[in-house]
Length: 142
Image (cartoon, rainbow, N blue to C red; front, side, top):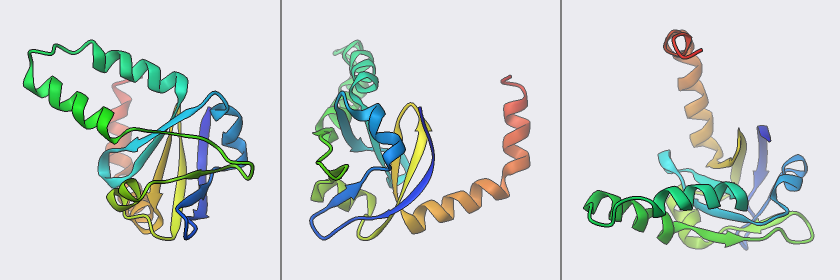
């Protein structure tokens, strides 16, 4: 389970320290890919396998399904923790998410989001401002 927000700095070689409390859930391997909202998603191998299976089940005759598969698989990169608990974020993924220095690593229960810190702070502010609206929408879900 991945919970909480941790602020880290991406070094000049594109290495990002993964919070110590998240590392045990990533020992089996992981996949780093583009997320929505200009962030990155870091999936444990087991979670990625489930996503990949659902994508593989999409009908090949549907052009939208083919494009979704292309977007998902082309952007995905297997990564490993080094001895210091860091992963290397490729230049392509760093560019997509605007990662240059300060980074927010955010637990999303079954996966991790990696944000440029200013973008995360702005999103967090918007979410806080919409708190009552979100609560009302969620009230019908539980």
